[in-house]
Length: 300
Image (cartoon, rainbow, N blue to C red; front, side, top):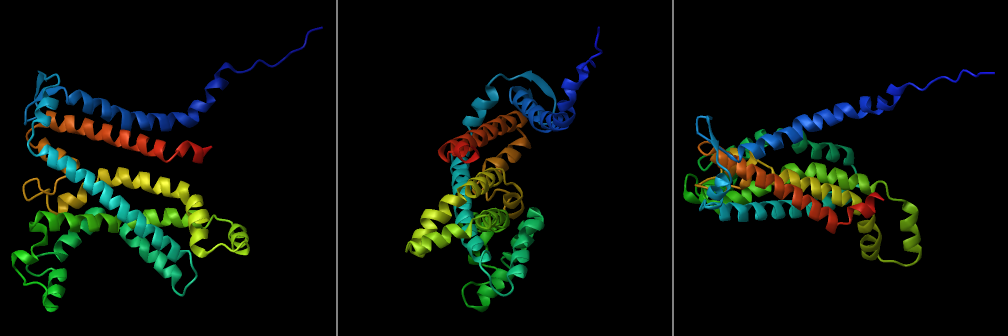
C-alpha cells in the first residue's frame, strides 16, 4: 500500500529572501557600494577636472597627512562632536523631565519642540546667519539697543571671528539636535512603572536618590540610542558650518566634513582619502561607545 505524501516545494526555502531582499539590496546599493567606490577613488590620481590619471597608491593619504590645516581640523572636529553632544544630552534630559510632568500647555510645548526638527537644517542655519549679520541682524540689533555692541563693528561680526563663530555654530547644532534627543528620553520616561517609584518612596528614598538609582539606570537604553545617533549626526554635520561660515575664515571653523568638501574642489583623491578616514572614525567611535555602554547587555 502506498501513501501519497505531498512533496515540499524546494523554492519555499527562499521565501525569506522576499522579505529581507529589498532591505539587503538597499544597504548594498546605498551604503556598501558607495564605500567601495570611495575607497577605490582614494587610491587613484584624479585631476581637478575629474579625469582618472591612474593609480596613486597611498599617495593621496600621504598628501592628506601633510596638509598643514589637518591637525587643527581634527582637533576642532573632536571639540565640535563632544561639545555639541554633551550639551544636547544634558539639556534634553532636563527638557524630557519637564515634559514628563503635568502642567498647563504641555501639549503645545511638546509640539513647539518639534519645530527645529521639522525645519530644514540648512534653512535654520541661514536664519541664524541672517540674525547674526553685523549690520542689521536681529541679535545685534537687540544687543545694540541694550548698549552691548556697536552695529557694523568687528564686535558685532560674530561669524567673522573664529572662536565666536564656532560657539554660535555649536549653539545652532544643539538647537537642531534637541527635539530627537528629548523625545527619545521622554519615551523612555513614559515606559517606567510608577509602582517602582511608589515602593522607593515607601522605603523612604529621597527624590535625588530615586532619580540616581532608579530613573537614570532605567533610562540607560534611551540615553545610549540618543547619544549614539547624536554622535553620528553631529560628526557628519555639514549644512550648519557650510551655511554659516563656509568653514572660514581660512579653515578656522572647518571640521573634517567641510574640509573634505573644500579639498574636493581641487584634490579629489585627497578628499576621498579623508572620506575613508571619516567613515573609519565613525565606525570605530560607534563600536567603542557601544562596547563601553555595554549595549549588548541592554539588548539581551
